[in-house]
Length: 364
Image (cartoon, rainbow, N blue to C red; front, side):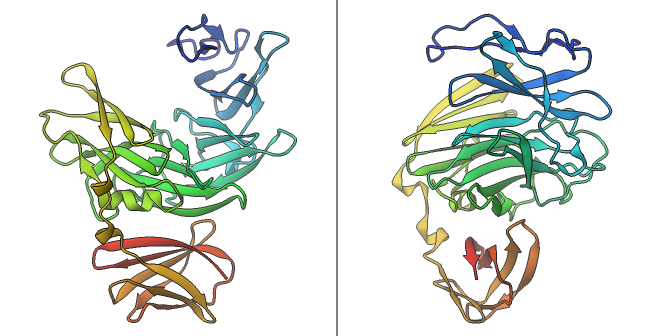
């Protein structure tokens, strides 16, 4: 984005050889007279780019521009947020567009009368943006743009996992959410570190092979970068809390805005060092002792006629049952691992005992 050129200043550059060489900048909206700003690109299954932008002003819509191969240019913007509650995008939070199994997705912070939650938009079988799912149960109300975005990873079992920041619980905290694209439902959501109250921001996520990883910044007498490791499946993000490690503890000064990527057991991490005016790059390896199975526990959950039975857990335990949209249905304390619940349908059962926690996907 060229600063000050909010209508016509968006640009993309494309590599066709894996990043060895790059083409020249291409204007995404050279003739526009209304705002097309904060472009975020994605690539479709044919290798063609498409771009999500903040489109217009008062209201700000979620614009989607697709590459026209015949014209050698981007087509006109279409409304990619018409299915959002209120239909309006947060005016300065970057989007997270991506393609998965032939359909386009876009994680967007919306603005529904100043409730600025993340929603996941998706195209239907005809390519129209007709679907929206609330992936952020925090319901953060704020009258100005918080200037933050979500990140996504496709986990090994096909789950879509997202990380983002919200301050709905009294301060800036980092969260994860998981989505089943087949049932088009939210299957889990929580704070990355639910037992801590430090200021957090800028989470990043990656998944490959056997592992999923989260990285985020935390301010505890100074900003540091924390990394957590979990399995590469729906349960992965819930386990980052047990394996989290401060990877910049030995550095003085602030470390901020991490980006993490993983390939097999190899982890790549970059982050900013503001006082030095530098970006640090680090490489590491996930080892078998990175996950403490004594913390994670060998808990199991099975249905019975009046609810669910959790075994292998220290007792007593606390539990919360969420529906597929992340809304609390029932909660309580169990002295014997039995959870009586009349709820029918798909949901998430969150159980906690003696500082340990596990989430189960349940259905009755």
